[in-house]
Image (spheres, rainbow, N blue to C red):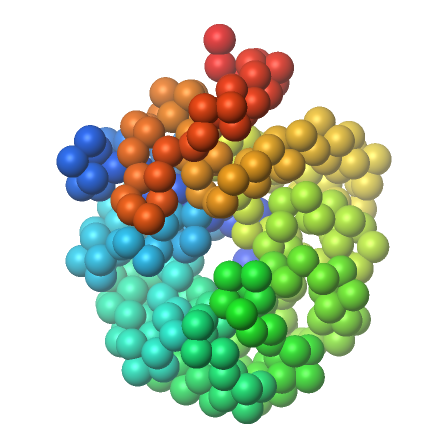
Length: 304
């Protein structure tokens, strides 16, 4: 039984890092680099880690590899950091199976993305998410990202799920639609956390809409700064939070100069924390974009 099956909103607020998956030249997982990245995140005081998410190249990660990542990460972080695992697919049955595998390996939270490609109706989304959540005792975070899935989880559907399914305790809102994010936050659902899915919008949605944190790409690069920014904002210290947000504005921008996770993985490579290796169809960054990212890292004193 996982110690975190009774997680509540207060215990999950803050910064979660969507961790990259480092590979060796033969495209096997680079476990030495992986463990180094996990330790660095722990030292950065983040609330939790998302493994096998979009930033971790989840479509190219096998179930066996995901299990090994969970076990290695849990061994390092113990009870000092939570582990979320991306276990959603565009098949309800497969999502249930992957969530069970993640739970048995030691995951604390499941992240379930909108079913992609097949574009279900709102009723289909409701039935899908409810079936997955009902199949597990893990807390579930829904992942709404229309740009990658082709379908949007509308706020009324989200509210219905949150009210009817006790272990659905939050949403990663990456629709990019500020009006939708605001509408979700305005629901003020009991024991339900709203996470920004866009680093560049995080400060705004924390300050203006009362969001609860972020599932972040940028915290791969600057975990301590991201944790500080969000903690300041959650504590009402908006001037301090805004200052860090302004310092990181270019990073938020350039980490999406190409499809995520290409730029962030390149940044971590330049910081000598992993190899510059991807699994197709992800591929190395274009040279001119790589130069932009590297110059920014130099400007931020993150590389020599």
